Amino acid sequence: MSEDVRKWIDQFRMFIQEVNQEVRRVTWPTSRELLGATLVVVFTTGVLAGLLALYDLVISRLLRVILR
Image (cartoon, rainbow, N blue to C red; front, top):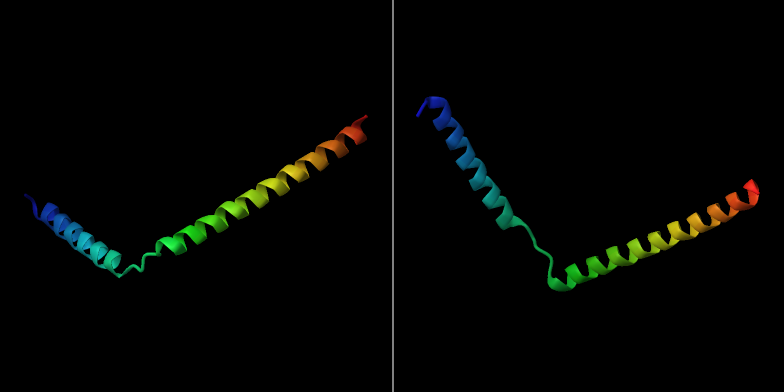
């Protein structure tokens, strides 16, 4: 193997080791926290979808009245 390839392999190994160290430091959410965050996202998405549907309905009705 050439020197460049060995250097690249050593750098890659070091990178993988550093990634593993960082992953061990991560504070993972509990299942209760994860469920709470998921519910917030689902609720917020539903509210925004409802608002967009309402806006679409109002604008389309206004355009129908204006363009008649």
